[in-house]
Amino acid sequence: MADWAAMVEARDAEIARLRDLLRAEHERANAAIDREETAEEHAEELAEERDRYRLAWLSARRRAAEEAAFGTDAVEHYEAKVQRLEAANTYLHDTIDTMQHDHDLWKRVARPLVD
Image (cartoon, rainbow, N blue to C red; front, side, top):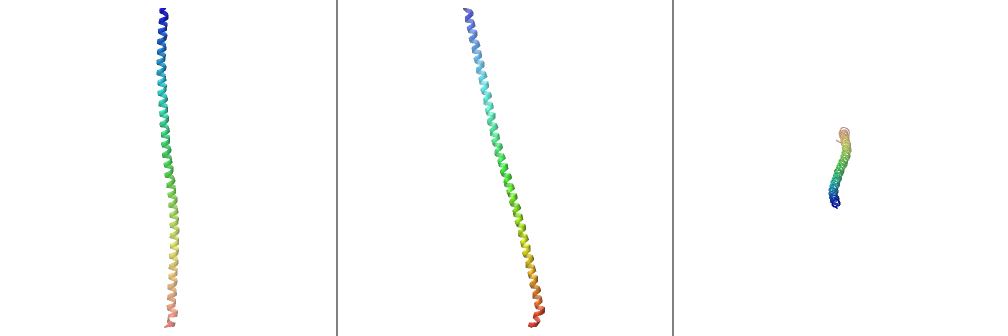
């Protein structure tokens, strides 16, 4: 019977050792899963941050394009206004020259007749 008792004790010791090994492996696996989940969460946070920066960059780029287009429109309107003012200036100068010519003509021709 002593052999049986020794065998039972050896089997119980082996079972305890295997349970301890299983518990340690289970804890190691859980720790690996936790590390993986933490890494995935961090990767998701980085992706969200990247997306926020990308959206901010796209928004800034769109605003810059709109401002550039607005600036181009403003320059075009300014150039058109300058052309209109130059045309008006030329017209006024021509009108003044014509009036001056008519006045000089009146002085030379009609004035002696009135005097």
